[in-house]
Image (tube, rainbow, N blue to C red; front, top):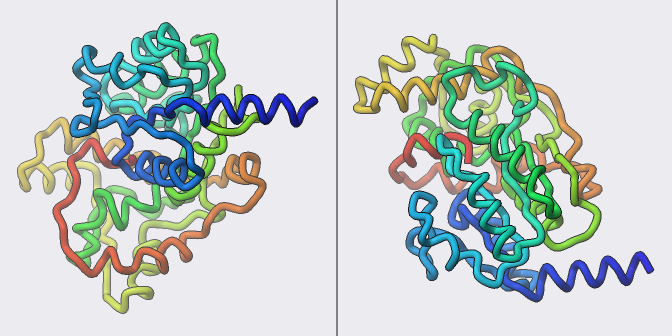
Length: 303
């Protein structure tokens, strides 16, 4: 009977299109690829997609949600839109949501009062738990891909990463693992009502992470620790707005305070295997540090 129930649920989630918001981002893009590799129908939600989806234009929500039974939900940081979106999704027949949240949501003061993502995640988690449908919450540590695809990349290419992280460590998680957990939660039974804390298998300081990239690429890359005030001053001098610069500095606060070094068991629980190590990620991503491209906007610090 258990096998029958599992087969019915899995079939339900793969018969109808699965909506992936943030479908061109670090985790969402990988979720899309894994779902398609399994033969699951996928609808990619983006402003350039078909149908078009724009978080700030609620008129686009219904088209994205039409006929959908499961959603991978990457919220829009700095906006409390997860709750109304989930409420509308339930009204239109969605039966399962997998939410990408953030580490430390349940730790008072973790993200700092100024960090815009904190309120987004707190309200978003509350929204899915109150939704009345099946839900799974993912709380990842800092993405390893920030070094190769995200906001650290241009600094790595310039051989000097300047951050207000002190000598704190982070258990960087590979976005491939995040996507694998998300796909399991979207398509399999056994993950509903679970909160998965996701991390890599060990913690590294920024200096240690940069040293691994240096070793893999044969380049001399330095980490330069700055105070938050020095960091904000440098960014505003480069043309960042004060609000964006301060939010970026605040996002580094948990690493600097030693709050991001712990190892989480979510990947082991969800996938029954160890998470990918940072060294393996660096070896697989070495080509990313050989070709220059512009850094993403400030809103892509973590995702």
